[in-house]
Image (tube, rainbow, N blue to C red; front, side, top):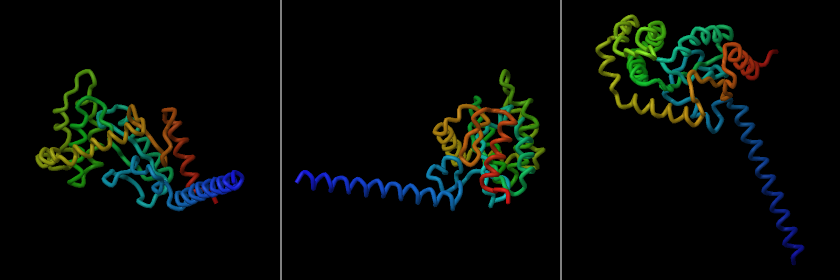
Length: 220
């Protein structure tokens, strides 16, 4: 009897292992066929509301957790545009928020309000170019940003109203939650198709992006 139980137990174990391996293989095959967005944790990187730039059909997602008041984010932005230009149509930039600086959610709200007017990227560009005047870490003066916002070609009074939309606050909270789960502790935080930039720097980001682009667009 013991022998039969052992045989039955061994057979069940083999079946379980086979099922797990098959499921794992199937999951891998689906991820391979659907790409980055097929992964179980893809929502941590890209939310339905996330602002994107680039080809909608691009296979390489460059996700950046950013803060409008972050000097390094401003410094990297032109470099990111150069990377996208180097691989035309192959990179989709996804911006997520991690407003770690005190009061930085104020600027995110302005940015999201400008988005309602179709002026997101124009406003972000103005923010980065004028950042030194309103985001000094030693003497921040957030109200000064309103001197520059008109340069984005927006309705300023409408932005002042729209930035108080509770949905924007919820959006920021969700991004901060995702940033924490992904262990983003400073900005900018980069991920290329889910792979984090381990060693920070321009060249390191260039190499990460290049490797991931080549992985999804292998040379013929």
